Length: 84
Image (cartoon, rainbow, N blue to C red; front, side, top):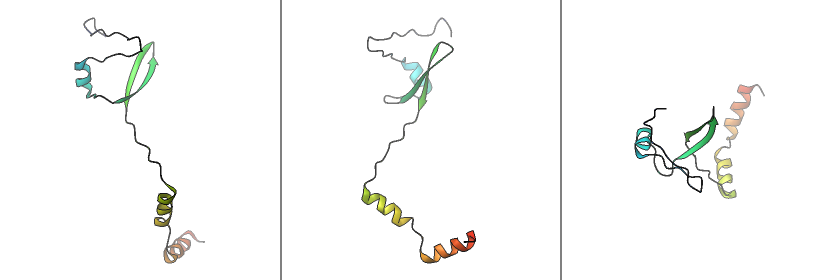
């Protein structure tokens, strides 16, 4: 790291502000998530994509199960192919 790298300071709440030019260079935006780690005594921030979790109601689960059921003909064909 060069001596002309910007200095940042840790707040009392443990927060740091990444300089705007660093954010722009990496395409970072407010609300982006990171995994934080330590490598060779350095703090490493790794951007991650957070996928929302959808919780399904019993009714929605029943819809999925119904949509995934095989007809009698499909079941017979599958059994024949599987040698059952």
